[in-house]
Length: 275
Image 1 (tube, rainbow, N blue to C red):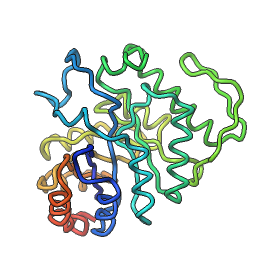
Image 2: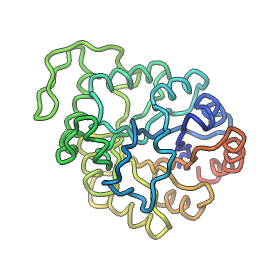
Image 3: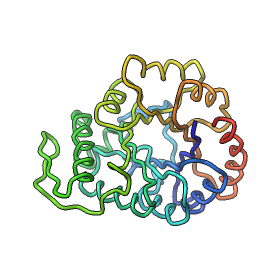
């Protein structure tokens, strides 16, 4: 099982290029970053993990410039998002951003996408929460169309554009892998039918891991990455390895450079242990 780092980076934490270099030097496989354009001050939508949402969500840096900075100082690690809130984005701009990252990283980009949970945030971007799942599915198809066609054209109920040219194309063939994020059957269905993998959230204990991974039973296998397991949760990491997860990204919350490097040193032995 591959071990990466899933980092919440802010304007007050370790810088992305410093973190990326340290991640690669210690043998981790990947660096994955989440996305929130902003956090509305209202609290209509409950925080999915329960309780109060961490204050640092409002300070998260934009993932694609951060990953481009990471690409400039690394040679090996996978650089990706977990997750990009695609229904809140323009799909043509996003196609170019991701393809450009893959170019700068020499084919090391990965994107995970999800419908999102913060309804107030969606409405700020003009996204209707009621149709975000259907919008996401068309956007995934549209991304692949732009990346794999010299002349791209798409006509759907939610995404519609006439023939267009857009370069660069991704270095990876046929395109940058798209993992679909989510907690349940809808995400797995999308991962199997239009995606390239499942980006799952972390389970709290080994029993919950088995229950979560059992959702994959009864259908084609799909590569699974898990975002947000604590570096100290060795029993949970063992359960994911034994359940066939492809990759786990250890949760790094916003901390200083010194603290981040200390945590990476503490977690580095997990790379060999869980391989």
